[in-house]
Length: 125
Image (cartoon, rainbow, N blue to C red):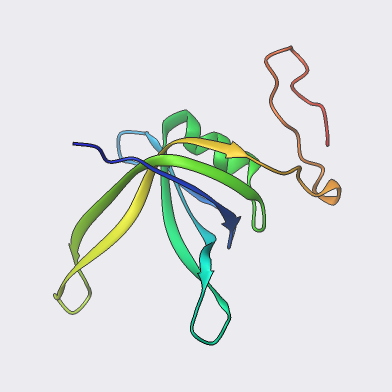
């Protein structure tokens, strides 16, 4: 069996970082992914896909991504069930990412820093 998904899209809002009761970081965000074909009226449609990251990747995404950034996400599709406020059973689809690649540079007005393994941890771009 294989459950692997690769997406490229833009964040529709800033990532939301939270911690589980045991202190594990989890970040969620949504990306907009254009479909590769046009609809009957000639317009390209967009899918809005929920992404979840865990641990160090979650903290990295929360600290260095924001609305509008272009990312490549690789992970697995997860379908989970939950009960809504009215007690109705619902399903949600999300991608649990194990890799997120930043495909563009942050806006210079944001004074963002990109971590580096070369020792230059505070290089603004």
